[in-house]
Structures are given as C-alpha cells and as structure tokens.
Image (cartoon, rainbow, N blue to C red):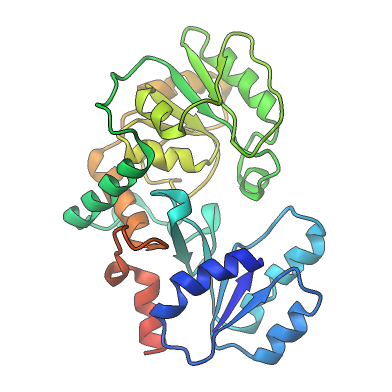
Length: 306
C-alpha cells in the first residue's frame, strides 16, 4: 500500500489507516519530492491512499499532475481532514473529496439510518472539544457568515464566490434588515471591509455558530458544524451536503437569498447525513469515538485485501 501526500499528511495516514489494513508493505511518498513519480511506479502498489486530490500550491500544474497519477496506477482511496472535530479525524472516500465525493452524490433517500448511540457519542465528543463547559447561551438573531480562504481548491471549483469581499457585500445587501456577523477564515490574513456587519475573529467558531440564527457559507466545514450543533445552515456553493435537504441551497438568484433564514431541515435527514459522515471518520486520537466497524470504505478494502 502506498500513502501519498505531503510528508506531514502521509504521517497522519500511516498512523490512522495503515494499522487497519492487512498490507505487508506500506510506504510513504511525498508529492513534493522530485523522484515521486519514479519511486511510486517502482513500488508498484496494490492500493494507494492519497491525501487530497488537487492543490493551488506552487508549482500547481506539476503537483496536480502528480495528484492525478495515483488512480492511473492502482485503486485509489482519497483522504482529507474530517469534521467532528476537523483536525482530529481523517475522512476516506473512494470517489473523491468535497463536491466530488461519494457522499455528495447521495440523495436524501440514500442516507443511512443512524446508529443512534454511536452518532450521539460522536456529537457529544465533538461538543466537548469545541465548546466551553459553561451552559449553552441563548440563540441570538444574527446571521453568521463564515468566510473561506479564497484560493482554496473547493472555492475555486464549486463556489460562485471566489472573492470573499464580494461575498460580504452581497450578504449585507441581501439581509439589510438582519444583524450580520462576518467571521474570516483563521488562515486568511486579508483585511475585509464591512458597511454594517461586525467583523469578528475572536473566540472559537463553534461558540459563534451556537449563538447564531443561521450559518451561511459557500461550502465550508462550518456548515457541517452548524448541523452538528443544531443550527440551520445555508450553503451558497456545492459540497458534501448538496442535494440532501439538510442545508438551504442557493439557486444563484440574488432575490432568493433572503429566504435562507426561513429554512429548517428535516431532523431525520440531518441525523442520516451526520451519521454518514461520522461513520467515515477515522480518529487520530485514542479518546475519540471510533466507528471503523461501520466505515463503508474500510469494509470494502477489508473484503478486497483480507
């Protein structure tokens, strides 16, 4: 089995994935090494687990050519940071990531019935990690707009907004009668202007989500976090959630944006969606719930390579 990605990503793959699969030979391959392609071909893997599927990092064209090499050589499973919480789990998918994933292709009727106890355990562990121990605050009336890094690959591929300033302007215009809080992505140092919205970088994002009336983003992880915290979510772009009925989804018409705050998802659909995500997560920490027995990707790989 070959583990492909940047060096720190393949270390995470080796820690989380390798012990679960019965491969005698496991080797890590750093996409940034000059000999990457020759070394991977020489290794001749039966299976490739690749962290990510494309990048905007330089040299972009060359790195993306290397990302595309894996599925041409061997069966490939894609991995990325998961959601609940993001940095503590890895997600596996055989089709792709984000809007290209197998989860994104599911219809509401195809969402699984939740294993209630296991889903409850996952959501409780997530909340313990991201929220203070204090009692939950009262829900407030503001709309929380969560920005993303403008050159993120999913923004470039599946969002109608590549310019976060333009997004702020559009939301302020569409929700003139509603208090708006804008939260820039923590990895985005750009300075943004607002006419009347509050621009806030303080506190944890989960704390802001829990207080909000509705969370709005293009295709951010914060939409999943909102669902996990019981807060309505409104999506402007495409992602894992698309076509499930779990988020309000924008049709591209400016006049329809205001209806986002009235959307309420069917709780059963939300639970089915969250369970589909939870069962695909592989924990990196020992104290987090592990649903490997329900993970559809690990099950299929175990059948192919017992």
